[in-house]
Every structure is written in C-alpha cells, then in structure tokens.
Image (cartoon, rainbow, N blue to C red; front, top):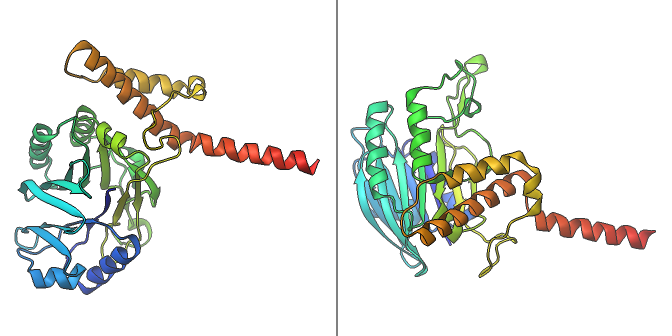
Length: 318
C-alpha cells in the first residue's frame, strides 16, 4: 500500500517545518516522504535522523543557491526505492512497497518559466510507461481551471495552462484529489490582496488506479509553509474488493457526462494487437467511469445498503 506525504515545505531546516513534518509522520505513518523547495544543497545522515529518525533512507537533489531542492525519504524496512532520473525540476523514483508491484513516483518542482517547464513535460513523457503504475505529485506552478484560483487578477487561459492540460491528457494522468481544502497555496496577504491557488496536485495513471482502487489524496493542515502538505493513501473501496472485477452501473446511463467520458477514453491512443487494444480501451473506460461515479455519487453500494437498512427500520417501526 502506498502511503506518502508530499510537501513544498519552503525550507526543510526551519524548526516550524521540522516540527510540523514530525507531527504529520506520527499521525499518518507514511512510508515515503517527498519534500520540495528544501532550500538546501546537502542534507546529512544526522540531519535526516533528527528530522524523521534512523530507519529512513534518503536522497537529496540539491537546491540552486537557496532556490528549489528536493529530498526523498523512505522507510528502509518497508520500502525499496531507487532514483531513475533527477534534476532540479523532478526526481523520478521506482518504489516497491512490501515486495509488491513496482511503482514510478514523480516529484515535480516546476520552474516558474513556461519554457523551462516544457522541458520536464517532454522528459517525463519519454519515461512514463502505461504498463507501470505511476503517481505524480508536484508543485506545478500552473493551474488548469479558473476555479483553481481565488483572489488576485482573474486568470486568463494561457498557452502554459493548455500545455499542462495536454501533458496530463496525453499521458493518461488523472487528478486524484478528493479531500480537504481545495487550494494548496496562499500568498498570506490580508484583505483583498489575499490569493488562494491550486498549484499542487497528485495525479495517477490508469494502471495505478487499477492497482490501487479507492486511493485517497487529501490536502492537510498548512503550517510552516505557504503550501499545504498532500497526503496520499491507497485503500480498496467496497465496489472493488480484492480479486473482483469492475462492473458497469445502470445509473450511469441516465447521466450525459458518462457519454462524454466514454468518448474521451475511447479516443485515447493504445498500442498492441487489436484484442489488446480493445481490452485496454474497455478497462480504461470502465476505470474512468468508476472514478467519475465515486466523485458524483459516492459509494453507490454503501448508500444502497444504508437505504435498505432504513427501509427495514421503517418497516419494523410501522
């Protein structure tokens, strides 16, 4: 099971950041931690022990001066992790938790410059493999929708936004957020000058969603940084128990949005023999429908059981 904390901490050596991270680790028990904008060029074994104790291994992508920097920590008795690729904008790791299937985890700290961001979209696209579960978390320095920003000047869709949206769509990456504060960054100003923006996201590819159905991405309490920590936890939902198959729900037929999802998923490119392509399109479409259904209706089967119990109670009451 993937249990991870991703946080743009704005300086890993600040006492308030260290204390908040330690509190998050005690509460949520992650097996992997990704810290962005650490503002350190090196981080020693002793400093890691002080931050998260001795059972954690670590990797440091140094900052450029006091700008940027990424640190990855993982519990060495639970997780095997090695770095596939690293630069100042992204650290790509392959992780195996409890000996299970390998995952690719991407920690992105995107540059403010649109042209420089394009470099990481291209490099990540070359590494992404549709057959390998992928989880991508980042401070992407970019929004997708107008509602991702509150306050300040109205956001006008720009080429950078469109490029980011195309990057996610072309690489089968779906937004995984489903809990907590909508925005992930605040400029900490007062009154009308205050601005809230959703700069941070966690995205999954379809293979990851299939391997980890019911994954939860929550925006946690913001302390010690202008960014919210993001908490990722995988769990099996009731509609996809271990070893079961995904099933079509008749209630989807009444929703126009379900038709749009089917068309969108069916138009995505796939490779292989005709039967392989057909199976892939069926599977990816059904997964997308399940994710949309969970967001719109919640757990349909749990609600049905609850209504059945209420009907039974009313029956006995009458």
